[in-house]
Amino acid sequence: MVDKKTAAVLIVGFLILVSGLSLWVLGDQTSSVVTLPLASTGVLWAPLLWVCGIIVLLSAAFANILRAKYYVIWLVTLIVGYLVIFGIIVVVTSYLVS
Amino acid sequence: MKSGINVASEDTILQSLTKTGTAFYAFVCVLLVLTGEFFYAWYVQLTTGLVVTGMRSIYNAPNYMAPYVAGGSPWGIYITNFIFWIGISHAGIAISASVRLMDLKKYKVVARMAEVLTLVALPMAGLSIVFDQGRPDRIINLLVYGRFQSPMLWDLTAITTYFMGTIVYLYLSLRGDIDELAHKLPRREWFYKRLAMNYQGTETEKERHNQTLWWLALAIVPIMVTVHSVVSFVFGLMIARGQWYSSIFAIYFVVGAIVSGVAAVYSLAWIFRSLYKWESLITDEVLKGITWALRNVLIIYIYLWIAEELTTRYMGSSSDLAVSNYLWFGPYAPIFWTLAIVGFGIPAIILLKPIFAKRHFNPRLTFAASIILNVALWVKRFTIVVPSLLNPPLYQTGIYMPTPIEISIMLGTFWMATLLYIAFIKLFPIIDLDVVKG
Image 1 (cartoon, each protein chain N blue to C red):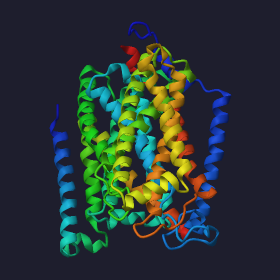
Image 2 (cartoon, each protein chain N blue to C red; image 1 turned 180 degrees about the horizontal axis):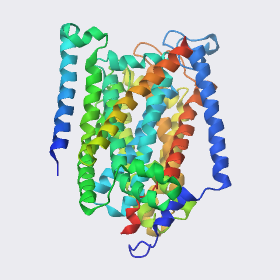
Image 3 (cartoon, rainbow over the protein chains, first blue to last red; image 1 turned 45 degrees about the horizontal axis):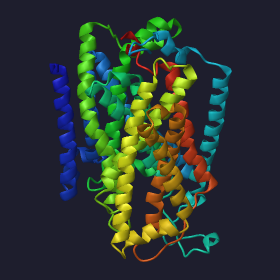
Image 4 (tube, rainbow over the protein chains, first blue to last red; image 1 turned 45 degrees about the vertical axis):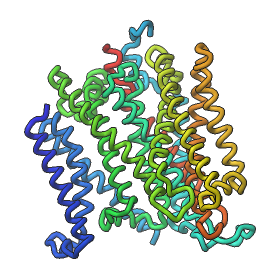
């Protein structure tokens, strides 16, 4: 049984995923990704959106079971935790390598 | 267990959380020391550079390799280790999802130990890639500047999806037990209560859990196949290396992963059964069932291996044949033939024996076969990665031998994985409590 909250999460996750993929493909074929406002931050957002979309999609299973508060806790933990792992590797190893 | 009636209780399962002896602490101390040694080795590699490893670019070999031409292999035991851990991770969701989707209740006792294996193995696979990089800080570039055409990025995507799916799946399957632990282990109530996230345990809630897990299992099975296929594409899509550019590679990797994963689950099941006297939970019938699966996938794997070698050797002169000759008669021939005879031949005989003599199923001997198989599969991945790199189409480039630093770092993943697994079994039941509730 899928409720409205779960359906909404599935749709949002899918949209993030497709946005990431579209920006990626466009970015590869043209320079359009550079002209997007987000690019002014200096980060190419397409791969990040792609990964976040995957995580949001999978978290729909949590949305189907947990109360909204707990679902948000899990979602934030998954996304932030994932990016923090990259952050730690980058910070620690760049310090040691240099 | 008699006639399918389980005589064990929840307390039997909770032994793994509550009973901790001196031997356990001694074992953990040894693992911590070994992990410390790993961190030191990695520190040396990071501060000195990859020159401390046996890996070399094709045209750059140090003088002590003088008997061999020049150069070496740019990939070595780290990439071997990566494929190995990815293979091990196959077990978890494959077994757990099969149990759920096909309603194989008998194997529910090993489902969680398999799921945890996936959760522990995947970070080790990821770390193996980090070790392989001279500048691990640049790993962030995969996320920031990833190119969709690259199989490396497919790998990142597939592994991320698999890892996240495993976390979600494991938590949902564990949530009921966590809530129960809050009542059974009052000293840890604070921790379990918060982790259970307001679990009520009503019939509706349980039903919803089961339905969600069923759908998640259904979604994760193709992800799992994708992960192992994508790992093979890192090699199989490269045309310039003998024995890599092969249409058989994806299925070869997937089957290899199933063999190592199922063998690892058998090993774990036998260890837990022996350690906690869980014969009434992990019965001979369960072990026989896992052995049956292991035997069948092993036969398929050996068949694929023979098919690959036959095709290579029959077609005459090619870069594939050069790699094959290198393995059969070159410097790695002792490894190759030991692998074929001891690594695969002996376990195959052990696993096939019960077919011909029904009473000859020996759990201990099968445990030995499962361990040999996993070592053999690690070495098999080595023979896939290194010889092809040492034999580019034009000429042979040298030889690769891992250094002590490299071996310490590679072994570090095993110590860390064991520590993580131990941490899990001291916090959560390694067998679903539902098993004894009937």
